[in-house]
Amino acid sequence: MATQAHCAFCFECLSANFEHRQPLALAQVEELWDQYQDSINPKAETESEVVDVEDEEDAEMTDADIEEPPPSAKPAAISRLLNRNRDASAGSSSSSLQSNQSGTSSVQKSSGSGAETPASSTSSLTSRTSSASRRRQDKPGEYPLFVTWNTISRSGYKSLRGCIGTFEAQGLEYGLRSYALTSAFEDVRFQPIPASLLPSLSNHVTLLTDFSQPTKDPLDWTLGVHGIRISFSYHMRRYGATYLPDVAKEQGWTKDETLVSLMRKAGWSGSSRDWQKVWRDGKGELVRYEGKQIGLKYDEWKAWKTWAEKEGVKSKALN
Figure 1: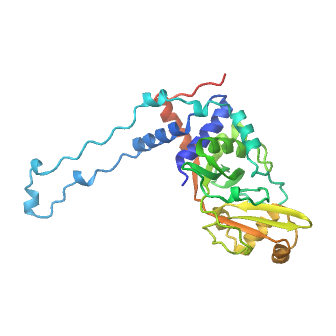
Figure 2: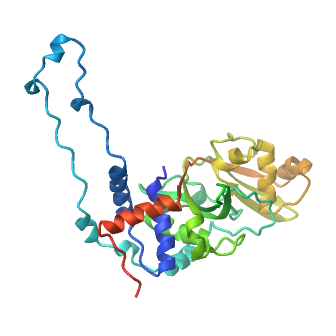
Figure 3: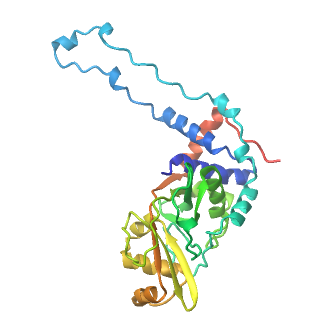
């Protein structure tokens, strides 16, 4: 499952791109994030440190009668993080983005012809349905994933600003870094995110799991649980698109409304009354999957980043 540390890493990659520096490695971000959370949320007393006095006999217990709890483990030294080999993230942001574009055939930028709603976390993908794109997690630490950027207004309104992902299993270090930048700069529905917009952003990461086999039944999925990826033919052309698990629930759509919206997102522009006929005639297929979206706001990332810098953690400038 995605974590806020994954979101913090996406912010780190985007910020590093703007500042022309190397981002911290994912492992560093995860460890520092845990240490930061411990520093702002001290752990409550353990049960062994609390003595419940239930009767007079218990009240007369001496210190010798109470077993001392073992000392808690100290967090990893910051110096160890500073000396960690950062080869995994030493490449420039632009090169990792280019590698992503050439190496992942499952991502296709939306034509913008489908109806989009501001809060939707969506991305159009190729209609080709392959066993590779339907597979589950290939290796530990590898997932199909999506990275979403939203802007948040002063009134708290969330608007989609970019969302691109892949159904190919990715190593998290590479995949999060690549798609953090791709979704920020390459979603053709929007202008590339400028540095000035960074303070208004929130980031969301979804790791995809539990892919089903393709089904002809367009309603064989559960609202609020499954994301869906569809593929169908219309006028001798194949169409495809996906919605992440949270989209339909956020929009308050029924299954039928979700399917119509998704077909239009893919490029179909017919009447909503005809969607089932188009689905049948076009040999429609649906793959369902699961994934819990985790989010982080800029202010939360910035507070962590400020703490890390005070602890002496710095990034290297690009040559």
